[in-house]
Length: 207
Image 1 (cartoon, one colour):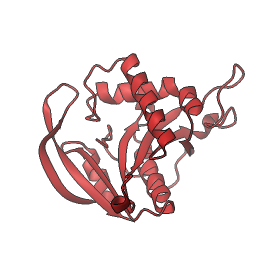
Image 2 (cartoon, rainbow, N blue to C red):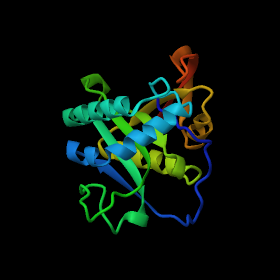
Image 3 (spheres, rainbow, N blue to C red):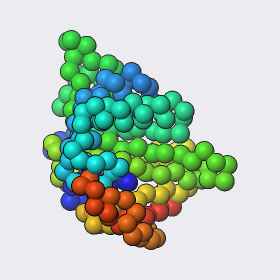
Image 4 (cartoon, rainbow, N blue to C red):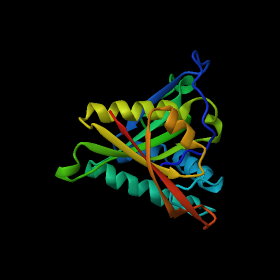
């Protein structure tokens, strides 16, 4: 589910820290960031986010997941975005693999957009796996990623987005504040990382 693991907070009008959002478009670039991507996924799952995994999530299982993501990327119906701190921007770009002389920028959050490969669903896409690292909490990272993915979807001709999240997730308040329309709740739709069942709430947004 498109769960977000931190209590939503307003974006500061003039943030002291600057961010960059990049789309990862090939396998090599994803592998460059694999360690950080795995850590974010493990942290979110092991801290209790319902995003499709049981805890504790091992590094090996996290790596398998991200490699599966690259396979879907190559098929063209999954788009992966990361938000990084500009503090490291001068050292390297998210699109350039690190070398011994460069340091990969710190990833503070990530989100994915899945397009629907059906001719009757070409107008919409689904937002999934919105995750924020422990070092990116309370900085407006989730909101910035959501705004970016909405703009990206709009640019590809999509006119509607959907997502779902655990009903008891603090992310519900954020989605509502961002103009998403809640359209239903399904009881026992998924599980928390501890294996107990959780309800899911579904949202849509016209672009």
